[in-house]
Length: 168
Image (cartoon, rainbow, N blue to C red; front, side):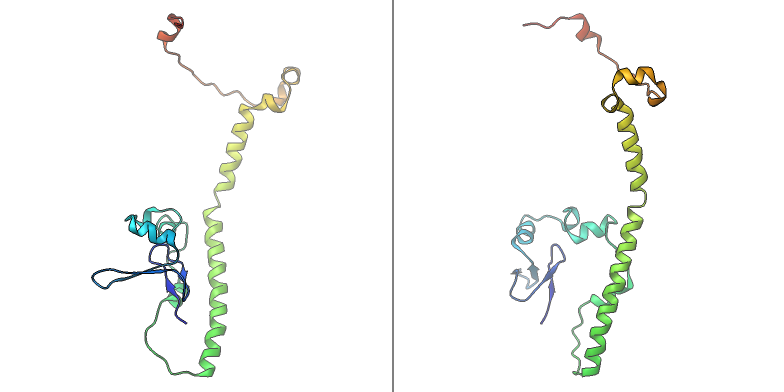
């Protein structure tokens, strides 16, 4: 059973699934679903479409270089069937898959490392700006310790609007 890769999104195309397009120069393009085929016909670049594997790798969202990818490559050299070799290969596939999952989890954790601090800063800023919604203004006047330090914001108004009343 041969599993192909979708030309557009790099997902697996199983036998009997997807669409195959053969160009005039005999180049074969395989697509996993009509979404990929339509995007190909619209001449979209997979590296610029956010849901594709090419975009995710180009923008550092997926791992690009790893030794486990070497096992996924297609090999066209026929091998003589050997039961022990097939058994060892199936065991190795499970181990390699586990290693890949662990490395992807580590990659994801490194990517998200700075996100928690950023979210906390944004939440503190939002709370600072909307503290009146959390505590009543009367309570804030009584206990100044509840208020956060004030942020000074300069707002400029164009003078043309202030001088002329609205016309009906």
